[in-house]
Image 1 (cartoon, rainbow, N blue to C red):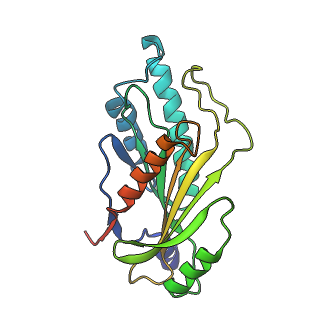
Image 2 (tube, helix red, strand yellow):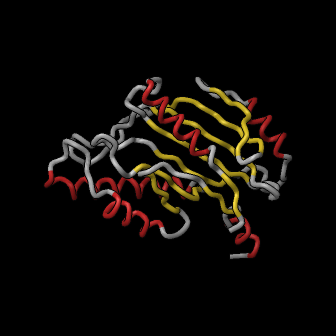
Length: 221
């Protein structure tokens, strides 16, 4: 690997987030396997209501396959970290997650952040909105929209936990890395909520994500 390649592949400055109880971070650049093991066999001591005791291991193995698939896809797209809830609420696991990833914006020809944000805000977001917001004391972009799947996602879990591809509510934050021209990250949230992307329950999950991003801070530690 050349020195230039090493620079391009180095992650941005460190950041910090305050997570709600029951949420965990899965690093995607290194330590992914160990983090998944900890999540599945330490944090996930409980299984959702409706899953028989004899199906508990099968449930965890299926969850591991799903999480590994999600982690691989996120890493291929510049993912740094995957965040998800691992403790059930009222016997139900929340179907939600968000990914922090690098974005290939202006890496070869750095552009002033204000110009990039203006251009992104002007782009059409079908069925959604794009607004300029403040994150960690700096301008950023927030996009909110719906995503409709083309087909069901296959799965081998018991019917009670089989993951079906549902319409999802998505929220993206796009942030420039301070004092590092041409470096950007995204924080992308996705949830089918309770199956209705416009329901009050789904709205509460979006508000929770917005609150998490509200704790975002850059760190040199």
